[in-house]
Image 1: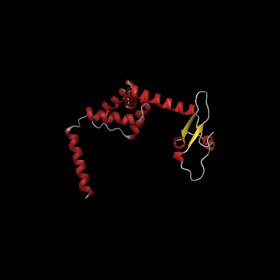
Image 2: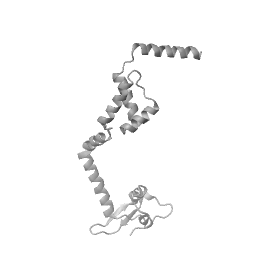
Image 3: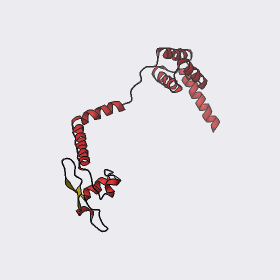
Image 4: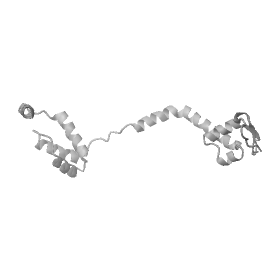
Length: 169
């Protein structure tokens, strides 16, 4: 078996014997063993025994690494496309028909000013089974897509804003 390193000996030039396995007896460069130890590949028992490393363990690691590399070369692009596909945010689809109908009924009843109060939103959420974020988004989208404030409403809004501006001065 190999010898431990003494003080002041240079690690990269020391060679030691690896324990015999069924088909292998070999020598390993200590620098490689220390590199494995730094990567966590060598246990503390192996370090205490002078850096001896089981050849079968090293071969298994090499085979595992080779297999991983082969699989990545062969299937890497497919894996990447699957990762991309799974990472995409999936659209959840339309809201339930009954919920949309209740929101639309409220919309029609308040068409002139389709801005539900917080109390209205809570009541709509309870009635539809949707959360308030969904209620808010539905009204935002509905107003953007389908609501045209009347000219009188636009003038009233502008008058209200200008009156507030004059009062604030």
